[in-house]
Image (cartoon, rainbow, N blue to C red):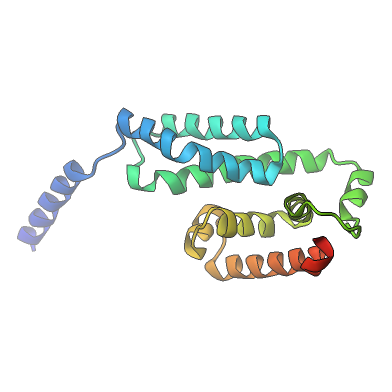
Amino acid sequence: MIFVISVTFRIFIRLCFEIRFMTVREYNRSVEEFADSVYRFIRGNLRNDERAGDIVQDSYERLWRNVAEIEYPVVKSWLFTTAYHIMIDIIRKEKRMTNLAQVNEMEMIYESQYTDLSEILHRALELLPEQQKTSVMLRDYEGYSYKEIGEITGLSEAQVKINIYRGRVALKNFIGKIETVL
């Protein structure tokens, strides 16, 4: 029994030396590779360039503070998760200050014909509940799998699928028939 423990301990020590955490070069590479997609994701949710940039910067600041604890292969999902949580904190803070008239205005259905499909889609996305909006954007805009979206948002894979389905149905109902938009 003692021999097995010592072998296990030796394997553990060897693994500790083999596990490599991020270097400065890998950190810089993560900025080059992922900053734009994190920015697009946050900007798509908040519709505010300055706040999206601030959230991305805060996410990378937190990454820098935790650089010794994070391995490079998980950086992308860590950044999206961190940015998502920062964004949710901002949204919750703003909701406490939301005016009732603004809420009623957002609930109005856009019924007139309009030819800018992109603007109509963004307006429809703004009306979705936050979890549905985030799930749909991560899936359809950023191309994440259900499992990855669950890791980022902290939801189960089943809940992610439900949110995406309900979000898509709401978008379809908002937009209506494509012929009326075009």
